[in-house]
Image (tube, rainbow, N blue to C red):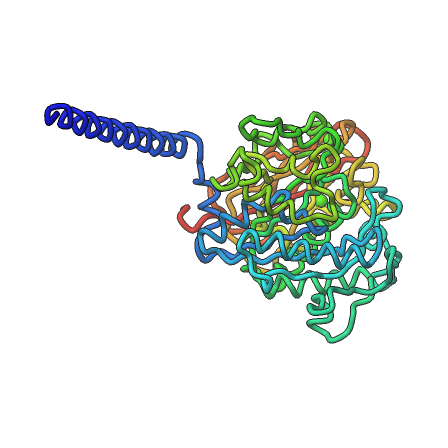
Length: 476
Ligand SMILES: [Ca+2]
Ligand SMILES: [Ca+2]
């Protein structure tokens, strides 16, 4: 009897030891797996270097939800790293009426709270919003209004507004609602950006097909350049993101498959034909681990997007949730370009079609046919045409980037850069499609540079952009 009892106790003891061993082993495997996944799959190097502690991050959203669709990961990473995050929501998303606009503002606040961003870091600007049709686009009509002060009406009114307990930026600054004119938006944007003095600005791309998006990009670029002209030290990096690609929302972003691992954003089929961006040069921001969960009910970005209830995130074949991806992607623009501080003269310019010499320093390196008013076009000139940048002070420079007119007829085949110190550099043919042509050289101290065309094809030679960069202080 005693032997039997000892045997039973021994068996129970062995069983307990076996169960504990299995438990410890499974925990150990799980920890090892997590560590292996972290080591192998999650590269946060780019993200952490940009969204670093103390950096000022400013995110512009054309409509309420854009801040989460392509920047939820950015916001979360930045907050984790103790960077400063501010969000500016420009339109009220009120194409279907004022009531829905007010609802959408509250949805942004809820979604951002999910990411840990305090309400006080969200600013509503209170401008109008429209469907994608360019002719009726509020931002497009504002940008192309007859004068700076011409007032444009949206679907619901002609002045800025916000939710009752939180005034919009213009009212907050001036005590009155701002009338919808180009000068009012310019004033609001410049004042806001000056106040924030961001190191990094995130904004919808020039190549996003929604007019409210790509026009806002142009307003923001104008604002940055204007600020830089009065404060030369202001050199933020602009990171542009695409929400609505030329593929159309039915096709891009690719919808996520159930029970599958999250995929990265794929290249839109129309990307190379519709944009001058280089897919291979995109910045890849891997989203934080809590946004990588395939169990979407636990995925932090999925949860944040679910707060935009008025946009029916579960409807439309899960369109909005298709922005829950393994990464968020951007293209970087560097505003340390000192050409913005120069005055421009040219051998001739087409003033009738607003294709002036100064368009080589407007921050937009594109032209006809997509953006005809953002390039310099000479009046019937080829070889012999010239354009010159003059500064009121001398700079030590070591890099120039030139952009040919993007049309395939007009092309600079060779040119000479002449510098104020008497030196010269010959260029080869510029890429005909308007992509960048970079010239690096030993630092030279100059106060003007002139590009003279030696040989060209086409009838009206020109440039879409002319960038000049200072030598790094470590160069000699
Ligand atoms: Ca330009
Ligand atoms: Ca060309």
